[in-house]
Image (tube, rainbow, N blue to C red; front, side, top):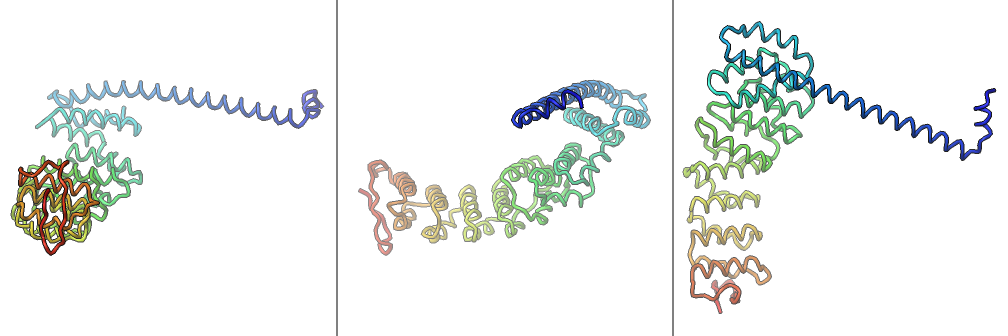
Length: 356
């Protein structure tokens, strides 16, 4: 037997454990260091590859766009086969094409789309859209939307109710921007709530939409309350006064958020005819909706209508009481300031409020 094993066998159990742990620690440290160095080398190579490919792409795109003698079809195939060999290369090419597309209009923009197809990037992204990775699907829809590239509708519809908000958002924007006459038809296929971010994106997209604006009342009975709320907002934004009666009915909607949005929108449209219903509903509403009703009375009502809800404002409702007193002073400037005013609530049958 060799000296080392004999010496090791003579060690105490504690020394043996310490020795083994030390060897493991050094081995792990070396592996970690090697991994870091390897990743660093890969990153540097990727950065170098990116810079080189970007220069090649810029030169190629300029020739493609502005050189009349440039053989577009042949050179596109050659460039693809020679330089776009990996998914990483294709991603770099897509980024450059998006940058060019953002700064070009008219005929040049059409040529960019032709180049997009010529380099095989449509096929590359379509494969991502058919795959399982949600972030690749969202990215593909983003690019198709930016370049106004048409893709099979079922592939986009499947993302409307994706588990990932980002994929749903991109599918929504794609449908709006690609539609010629019915930009919100996809709402009939929505089975998941619209997030606030999605509603903002849809609102901005509709402002930029150049086609005919749809009648938003067709979705006021949608099963998703967020869709109903969005359409109420759009009725106001696009001045669809023909839908006022439909919005008025929603002040009795079973969902509080829908009722609140209907009240806010009717105030913006200056529809005072709904005040009797709001005053009737006031006792049964929550604090937030009560505040909105007070605002409607302040803007569209009278002091007498304000007094009608006084019996239903309790002393413990401090915020409502202060809001009530501010509006009361707005109607009657002779009343004392809010901080010196005490609201005395009379029984409902007296149906009035007195100020001291």
